[in-house]
Structure formats: C-alpha cells, structure tokens
Image (tube, rainbow over all chains, first blue to last red; front, side, top):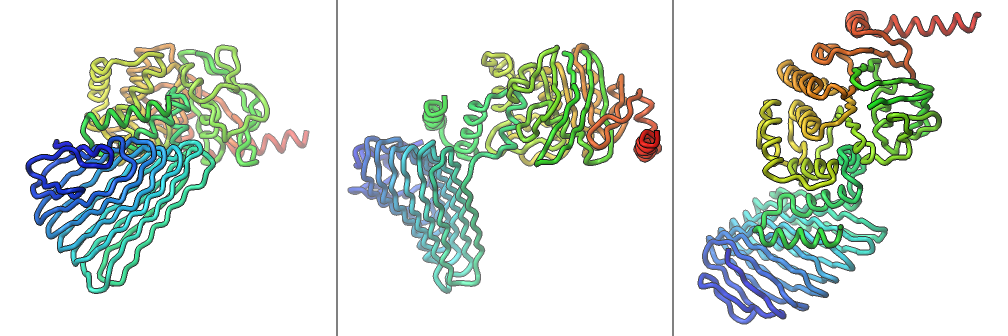
Length: 252
Length: 257
C-alpha cells in the first residue's frame, strides 16, 4: 500500500503514480493508498480521481482538535472506496463529494470514536446520470461526548439511474445528546434511494448473551465496540492495530 | 454442581410468572421441564442465569449450598452455569472467533493461545459437522437455525460448563442436525459425567440422546407433576390436557374438602 503523510496540514510524501500540487492529490492509476494525518489541525485537500480509476483509500487521524475541508472529485467510470477512521479530541468537518460523470461510484465507510464534540457534515452531489453513493457512518460517543452528523445527498432533475444510500449509527455511552440529520434532496423520479439512522446504546440482549458466556460487562462493551468499529472495515494490519490500541486505551 | 431452587417466585413486567417453584438438581442428573407455551419454562432458565429483567420476589437459588441471587450473569457463568438459548443472538461485527477466545480466556482467567484454540475449534467443529468458516464470521449473523444451535453446542464443548440449561435447543433442527447435536451432547455428558443438565423441550426426541432422570411438567409457574422418561413419552402421545385437567380437578376437590 502506498502511504501519503499529511503532516501539519501539508502533504509530505508522494508516490510516482499520483500527482500532487499544493494541497491537491490526483489519482491516475488504480491502487490502494493510506493518508495518515499527523499533527494536523486544519486540513484542506482536494482529491481527484481520473477517468477509469478504482481507488481504495484509507484515511486515519488521531489528533487533538482538527477540522477537515476535503473535497473529492470523481470523474467518469471511477470507483472510490474510502475507509476513514478518526479519533480526535474535537472534530469539525465538511466533506464534499462531487460525482461528476457517469458511472462514478462512491463507497464511504467512516468509523470514529468521539471523546468530546464531533461535527460531521457530508455533502454528496450526484452531478451526472448513473452515479451511486453508499455512505456508512459508525460512531461511538464516549461518556460525555457529543456527535452531530448531517448527511446531505443531492440529486438534480434529469440525473436518471442514480443510487443514493445513507446509513448512520451512533452508539452513545453517556447521557449527552447526539444528532443525525439524514437529508436527501431528490428532484428526479428515476432513482433508487435508501436511508437509515439510529442513535442508542448497545442492545441489552446482546450484552446478556455475551455475559452468559462468562464475559464481564466491561469486556462485553469492548468486544461490541471492536465489532462496531472494525466489523466490515477493511484496513491494513498496522492501521487496524492502531485502532485497536485506541479502543484498548479507552476501554481497559 | 448441585442446583437447588427453593420456593421461588419471579415477576416479569409486574406479572408473576414463577410461583413457589421448588426443584433440586444433583450432580450428574438430567432433568427435563415440559409444559405448554407461556407457563414459565424459559423464564426459569433466564432467572437461573441471572437476567436482571426477571425479579426474584421470594425464595432462593443455591449452587452447592450458596445463594447465587446476588451474582451477576458472568459470575454465574464462571461458576459453570451455561444457558443454550432458544434464539441465540446475532451480533454483527463481533467475530465468532474473537467472542469464543474472549469467553474461554475469561472463564479460565488467562489468555488462550491461538494455536491451542484453533486445534480445539477444529476438533469441535468437525465433530459437529459445522462449516469451519463459521468461526470467522460474525457471531450467529446469517447462520441458519441449525447452524445457530450447533454454535451453541460448540460453545458447550469449548467452555466446558458443569450445569447446562438447554432451552428448546431442539427447536428448528432438522432430523440430521438433531442427531448430530444430540450425539455431541451425549458424548460431552459421557466425558464430563458430573455435569448436570436441565432440558426445556416440547419434544422427547432429544431425550433419546440424553436419557433423563426426571421429567417435570410445569404449569402456571409451578411444577405440577414429576415422573420418569415415560412421562415425556406419555405427553408426546396424549398432550398436556390430562395432566392440566387433573390439577384443576384436584384443586376443586381440595376446595370441597
């Protein structure tokens, strides 16, 4: 896997098959990439996928306070699988996806552990026919943490044959309120759209089942958190170990 | 392990489900609870396991002479009590392997080695004729009814409990799967003869593999009749009505007297 380091908000490392100018990354060839955000507090990156590319992109951030303003541009016949994990003190982000041409496909898998206050705004613009977006957010709010999600999917008239999918779940482990706003602004009838949102704690029956096998409540919680964050989240071993360490440090 | 249920009354959602129930199960013994739907059979299994939604308002449950009412669910499991559930939970994201290793490590108070775990798992899954890939999948997620029940028996084989409650383990099993599950449980009992078993069932077929010492009929939250294996066969033939009607008649006679 090719690794791209973003240190103190600047892109520090590049590979031959990607083009970087200022804070713009252009992927021209198929491949797997990891963007590691280190000591960042304000990230503003434009990411382009050239025609006919399939990119599996992993993003990892574990910082103090951070704001993201990343913008992704998907051209014709592109496929972006974006696996993103964040556990920052405070996060404020506005992420824009522009699906600009036919057969642009986005699969966004986001996982986070919020320790204080996280605000996420995602904007998905279906700017062409036959584009599809599949947005999955899975976040855990620690004791006093709050999470605020707004997911806006836009589909203009005449953009036929599109597929829009949003699925956001927040597990709250404390008393603070969290919010999900799943919005779909659809002006075309030829569309397949689905959304699901839920906020709550882990299922009592799941915890009971695990405890009947001798697993303590705290261990059950850790097992469920691991499953919630890492289930269906395909990352390399090193990133997985880093995420596991964050879970183990938070829930001993 | 000796389990004693003494004069137990249990309330769920402000409704009394178990009423002055008494039952002694000694080490090595196999007991069967039968009865129509909704009379408190599954409630009994949940209350033994310590589900906090089931409130004990009177009586006690003793294990080897000591009350377990104040013990949490996991502590009861650590004593050796195991509840094989009628509807095992599907937990997406938690791998069967991770779950089993955590449970074994927790019960043994030490981290189980991966190699040792894999060997034990392979042996057990092979004996249960289970697809080996089920161990890597999310716990019970997308498993068929039969696979879920086999997964419960796999847990018994790996966790090695001393007191097993089988809550309608035989429901939803086809003939072949029932045979495999029954033979595995019989083998477990032979290898761990001190283990006692409480079987909750509607059908005596499973009892061909696990010959019971006692069969109890439960109705309206209490045991109304205790007998031998033949009682289960009689219920299979005639149903519960005879026994339930007799109880009502007896009550009327008592009132008359």
